[in-house]
Amino acid sequence: MKRADILTFAGAIIIVVIIAVASQGIGSIPGISSIPWLNGFISPESPYENPAGEFTPHTPQVWKIPKNTDLNTVFVSGEGGYPVTDFPDDMTHFGASDPEYSEIWMPGEIVRFATYTGPGNGFSEKFHVPFGFWRINASMTAVNKPESSQLTWILVDAETGNIVTGNQMRYGEHVTKTVQASGDAFYVIVSTQDVNQYKFILETTKALYGDNLIQSPVRRLTAFLNAA
Image (cartoon, rainbow, N blue to C red; front, side, top):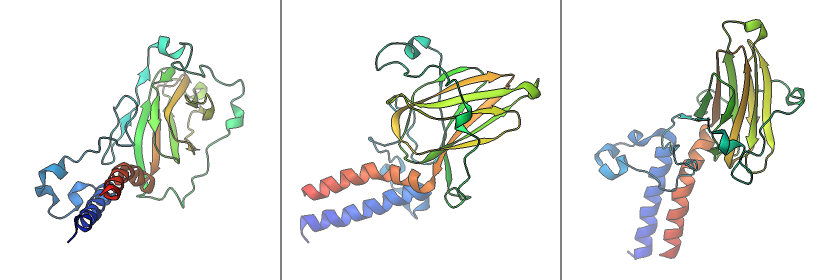
């Protein structure tokens, strides 16, 4: 058998393993737990890594987006700062919750990949989202003065300065906002009134999650086989 044929056969096996790991996890492959190097499989160029490297899930796990308490990094001039630091004058044009799109967001096909939680006003750290289609589930808890509670928030694309989406919520509301944008730098601005706790859950579909997990190692493997 020629060397190129052997490499092609080996490459096909590796691709099958990567796809299985992405969709079901490493333990789903019979006998795979006995292979030590596969148990520690990590893609060094995972598309999930955010710029600071905190978020590298190879099985579904939820990354907690930290708050940015260093206002010097927010208001600094130039590309390093935050291009939007205040809310629009009119929040009503963002509307209410987006439709659920049940044909896309089916039970068992939703992956939570990050959360941002409060209390407190302010800014999140910039975070990376590799998915071209995702959504934010926003909710809040108001115990002391629910009748006057309000949660105002926007999602900003830090690369373009565009406000992607946002909402102004009252007590008892649960808002879902769909986002069709990926990039290396998003952040959230939050303002609260009589809110005890808020939570933003970032979700995508299982198919998109798996596609992003396997695309980087598959590209490297394809390049290696083409060079053989």
